[in-house]
Length: 498
Image 1 (cartoon, rainbow, N blue to C red):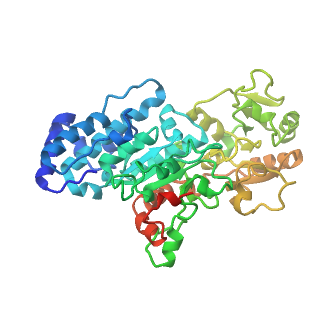
Image 2: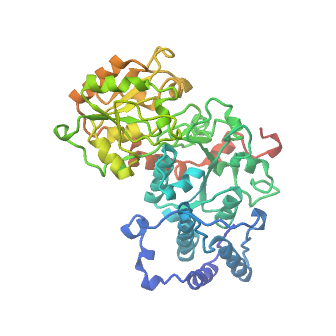
């Protein structure tokens, strides 16, 4: 844990860092600019991981000579030349740059570094954060990518790890500056991938009387795109669903301005018993113009990125698309790729465009009269992308399994009933809710979408300003430690954890 207690030590470490990192401040004015300027915004996020054991991490002492020696050790471990073996390893040099920025902050501002935006550190460990550097466009990666963008716009320093040992190595030297640690929770039948639980149960990882330099439990949050799906949330985070904000409000403790629930596991949608982190799309989709109705093409895009989606329990059977196209007067188009090894072909009545880049995808969707759901993929952000560029979405649901379009709890996000329950808050002319297998209703919705064009219609919660406020609530505006004490979760007794 770095504790800079005198200006002399700060200056000494600062001078040493300038030499070690070859940061030519006088010749590189961008290093002196505040976060948020155009030059600063070009800096990346991400990071290198060293393979030593976590309990072998550097200990920075208060003794000036010892600090120099151990700081050298710390830098050697934290700033190696990253091995770039594949495209997705871009997070490694990005974290290296982030660490250098943070060390510059410490060297120049000392104890006051933590008051600056770049002195607020977030550590993330989750596959889909790292996949952002691969250029992936899955829903999970789009979510994590927008969260990374929010961190950057707020000026935070984001450090990326690839496992629990990496989290510990990144945490130790900057313990006082780390505000939040986001890690993967339970995925699969066992706890091998549940890094939060593994840290809680490891006396060398969790902060306790016997391990004062460990990670405080109140700094750890889980992350899952699909949610816990009704599992006891204790299986995913040892503190269970409650994180203390609701309790804190009852005892008069100042809480988040948005008064959102303070749950332990974060999600992209407002799942029950989850912390709603959400995602943003406008920073990408609004770069694309809305095509005027008179310039749109008479086609509808079917949201089915895999060929198998047309055959594995689809909302509309493969042999119905020709009839739909003829009845609506709209050409049906698709970008599905063949994941069936030649077992199936694109259904008759659909024209395949093949796989498109994200930019070409936006152009194609913007020129469409509608985007049509076919049951999969579930919980995709694509319908909101469509709304953002002025294209209505046709949302299928199973009318045999629900009597309402306003279900509560997990029923709202049951992908066997609704393709994306988050769309249920929106109605025509933006979203048309159509019963599965009902071709007549599908034709009527397509004709209504064609006759009633819309403009940009992205709900406010999916905009960057809203996401940044939620992120700020998480990182800056909530005293998670105070809430943990108020709720009686501290002092931590590891032996009593589930």
